[in-house]
Image (cartoon, rainbow, N blue to C red):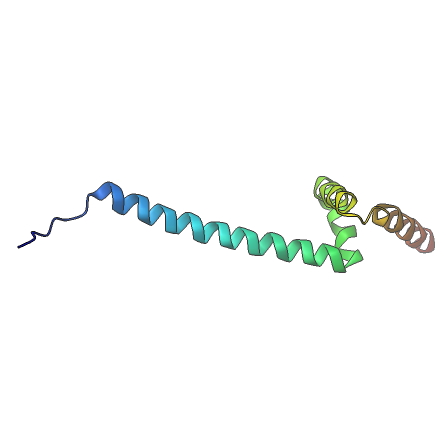
Length: 88
């Protein structure tokens, strides 16, 4: 007859840590996709990001230039300049 031996605590720790890491990674991916989707569809959100986190918007524009949408940075800056001219 086979005797049952308890699993070592190390493997329980590794298995639990892997599950936690997978869940954390899935949550981070969902949040980053949500921010990317909102930046991709909402110019006012890009303007907010530009005012508060300009390095994030710079990475967004660089990714767009690599993927093929190279003129979005110029369009956004032209629209924001026109809007700031109307406000003053």
